Image (cartoon, rainbow, N blue to C red):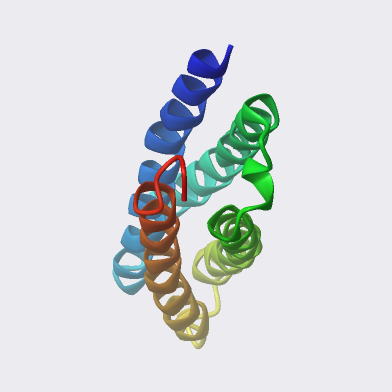
Length: 146
């Protein structure tokens, strides 16, 4: 059972975290180019992959519960879970800003070009990438006996 949960945890990490990171990192360029259809696609991708990334957390928790031995109480697991929750909140903020940018760029008003959303998305997506790398480090370095 633990092998299946580990496989699902890793598969969800690969197939959701990577794409959501790529989509959020591409959004600022698309906003600068004022490409509304591409921005709508990025916003949809961000939402779908963000929801899918919950699987990483769920299968990680299930794996920790199956392994027992206080694995979920170890410092690196607590830090990883906390960082994941912070990352999830950041994805909600990015999704909100993407929706706002789509609305602003799709309107007839040319005065607002979504510069505020562009800057915030760029900053948060960069920080989000660092958080994913820290979580990866915390999962690999301490090892199973950490």
